[in-house]
Length: 180
Image 1 (cartoon, rainbow, N blue to C red):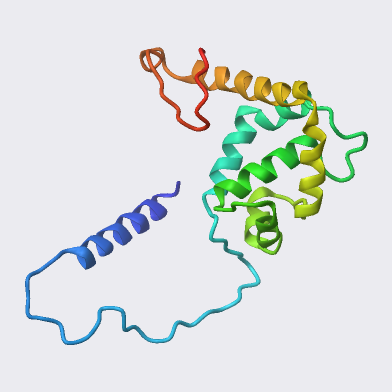
Image 2 (image 1 turned 60 degrees about the vertical axis):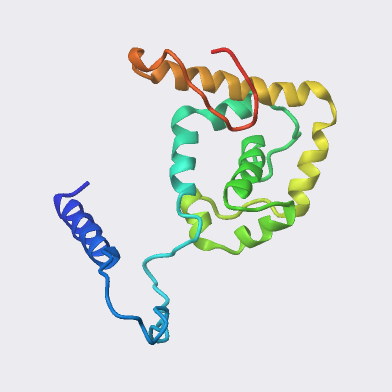
């Protein structure tokens, strides 16, 4: 990160700490939440999303090779027009991370340009397409194949840790206990 960015972040953190510093004082006659009407602008240069952390998650998925592992393990589609198996699996997982609780919530993400920009994609599968993909998991070995792909990447995560940190790890993501 640039030195100027570090300075900017330090300054912003200091400003927030100053705002949050509690000083005893007189009783307030007005509510704290009383700011002016916000002004919203549309930028031609940048997009934003409420799901900003998804970019970090997607970077981790790509760097660990989870997307490639999923594509190697799952062969559910005869043709990849336009999505790979990993696109479908990650689409559903990212929907959950974004706060979605059902496939229909994917439609909100499909309308979020900032979200799709963070993933580097033109579009994501719609809820109907996601449901069609999920119905292909009827056979048990397909679910096992996906779990095996995830577990292979989990071993890689463990391997990348410094030896001193490899004594014990508790990752409570899906309730699965897996020796590594």
